[in-house]
Image (cartoon, rainbow, N blue to C red; front, side, top):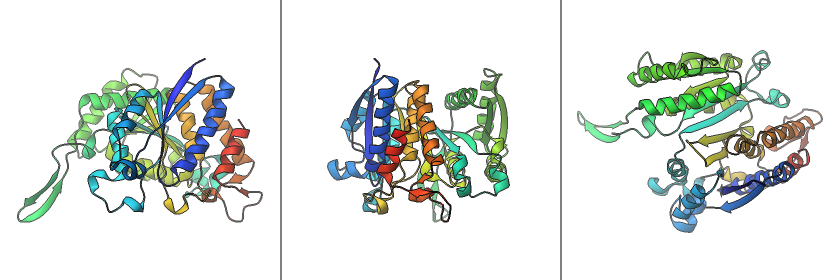
Length: 361
């Protein structure tokens, strides 16, 4: 029997609550699919700061590198807003991505038919469906480019960052996008700003060249400002979107919010090899922490991504996704996706929602 080691980083706020439900569903799937689990636990974010003085202890890094995959709950909260910038909780997330060499963020933006009424777009637009995979490069661009900082220009302060991509970085993220498209609708839209930026001109050239290895996938290009508009105007036109770190940060949040259900959306951060890191895209909302109000479905769907991308356990991944859909069809809702005035819906808490998904596997 195969056995997989997973490092669990529950983190802050609602992190421990949603993680508990994700793990419960994972254990249930393991039993049904016949594989074993070894779980280790590490500290990250604010919880790590409180315990060790820093957001990413060396022990956490070691446990993650020894694992086959990493599950993350959430990091941050107002408790740590005013501490030194270099050790804020979010630095733990950036740090573990770097330590694990995670260069590709896969973020699906999907609207479940049962939640169409929560979508922020017009009904005639939603009718076409929303099922997009955004592939965002994670380790380059203005977030990590050098030089950066502040200096004095003509007697006043000026801040500067460097947008930079190497050819190898572009090629590897393009490959991830093309491979993802092969498992979906076989369409990739590469988003850049090649009409203005030299770095985007290189980006487009390399993506086009790499596309020669994927003749079965359709490739198109779009400027980022147009892509932002098209996501709202006609999201059904997109299958896989691949883009850089800065543009991907913005577009993936836009794609998430138009679905109207940010508590439903998972993500995966992948490198050249395991371990990948899997987490919901929502934050840690400490205002509802410990109240059994959090929506665990994004974490549970992140477990499905983990099974698919790190363990090649497609059967287990599909089981989870079907179970989530069934629970929604049965009318169960946490507070964030509850539609006021709708008939036949039942409000449940975090624990109950996790139990319902497990029961429907």
